[in-house]
Length: 74
Image 1 (cartoon, one colour):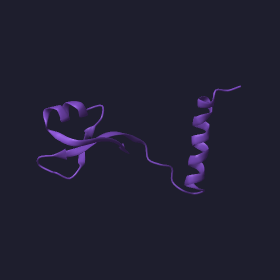
Image 2 (cartoon, helix red, strand yellow; image 1 turned 120 degrees about the vertical axis):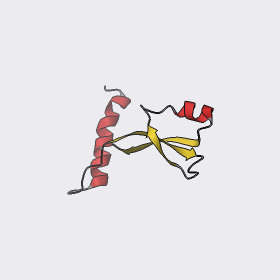
Image 3 (tube, rainbow, N blue to C red; image 1 turned 90 degrees about the horizontal axis):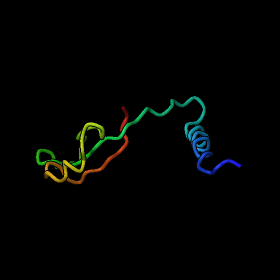
Image 4 (cartoon, one colour; image 1 turned 90 degrees about the vertical axis):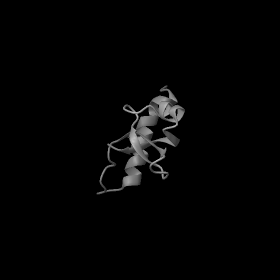
């Protein structure tokens, strides 16, 4: 018997196909992005890709606040 987690990717592909529907474009490839506010721009905005920017360091230095990691198109 397969482990339930081993079946999840297949389930996700099935759910994705249903959500897209026939003839719809596939979703764009995404990657983790760091978003937050800075002194220059208080509105949350793109600060950099997670593999290039350390959100903990940005927050600890006071450079940015309200930091979130979100998925953005690559």
